[in-house]
Length: 93
Image (cartoon, rainbow, N blue to C red; front, side, top):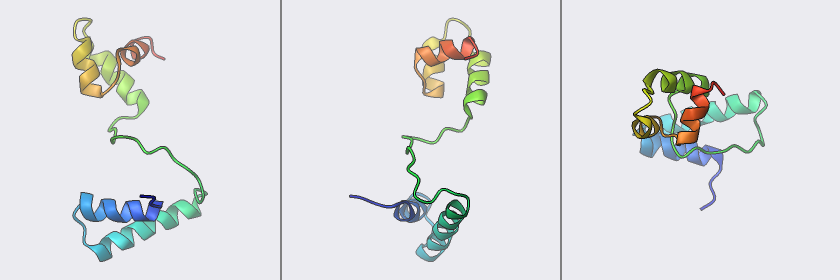
């Protein structure tokens, strides 16, 4: 199925958030219009497999704070990263 951004937003708002169709359509329209006004019309974007609550810098700081040297698997699971990402965060990269 090939959906455009407005279809994805509309379905996500209705199904994922339980918003009624009219309200979801108004919200989706507002987001699409904002994107077009800010130079995003026609762009292609990566769609992540899940929402990440931290910016990369925030995630690095949290990893450095939580990592004890003996809890690699737990830190990887908590932040949804691989061990390489943990070690890069520890080295501030």
